[in-house]
Picture 1 (cartoon, rainbow, N blue to C red):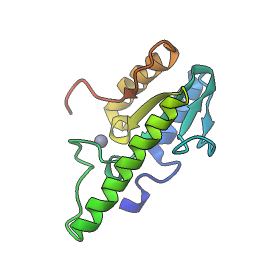
Picture 2 (cartoon, rainbow, N blue to C red; picture 1 turned 60 degrees about the vertical axis):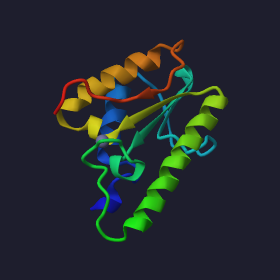
Picture 3 (cartoon, rainbow, N blue to C red; picture 1 turned 135 degrees about the vertical axis):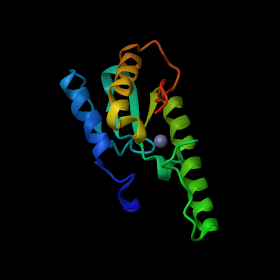
Picture 4 (cartoon, protein in one colour; picture 1 turned 30 degrees about the horizontal axis):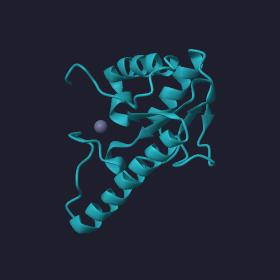
Length: 141
Ligand SMILES: [Zn+2]
């Protein structure tokens, strides 16, 4: 079950893609020529977006970012590598002039989806906003 989280074309990412496409946003998928192969690339908006699985990418304070009880050291090293790679990709993209967004998967499920997509799209269309975007939810679950 865990192996599915974070793989390509997982369901929360599809929800995001379909909604954005219906709203008129155009994007490219998993562009291999960019650091980290961002899940979505918006050339017109000079922006890239990663949809991060909370488990593999370690969403801070998230219920889905649990640590498996078996082989804790293995997981600690693995997680450290993942988060360091994420940080490196983001900063490389930024130095190439891309605006970067991270959307956490748990923010694309159930009642969170609309709020997440709304905040992402308002960031997307505001090309002057060079601050990195990271999804978060106002109301508690
Ligand atoms: Zn999460």
